[in-house]
Image (cartoon, rainbow, N blue to C red; front, top):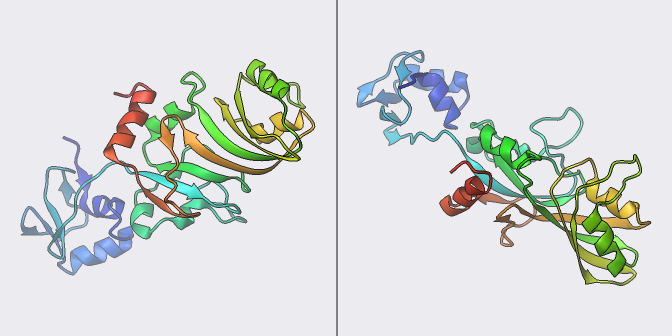
Length: 243
């Protein structure tokens, strides 16, 4: 079994920075299998050795999976020199796992964003070969007509000449401000907005409500998040063939 440095393991479990963890070990707050740890460099086997901090067992977990209801005004990134990023919304415990958003939502787009440190799952969810659906609720400045449904179904030619993959358009209300749901399998830059712009229509509000089988929890307010359930993690992995 692969061994890991004690200070790195504790830091990755969200107990503090590497410097803080080293200080806690040197202060006698950490035990391994009931024995006082004295060296931050000590090697332990994650998930096998019993590591306790101040008498509390630190449960090892390799991956985390969070559902975030992204608010407007934040970028889908781990860091940005000029903008607020979604990772700032997480408690320090979760930040300790070094998670990242799976894909991107535009700065002014709200809704479902998966946050994880599971690189394999993230890669497969975003892979064009897997064709994972992403569904958005949108409010449109203009009247969306039945002929737009057929156009989306065939694929829409964008202003740069790119022809999108077929998409599903469902009209909820067709008025001066129309409301629709759009399901795409790609993630081109501003794709939904550009698809409507190709028809002379402007998106005034956009919110992602589903990614594959994962549906945004309507109990989450803007900027709130929660862990995925075991069932949600399972169906996501089955969606991309990991299980």
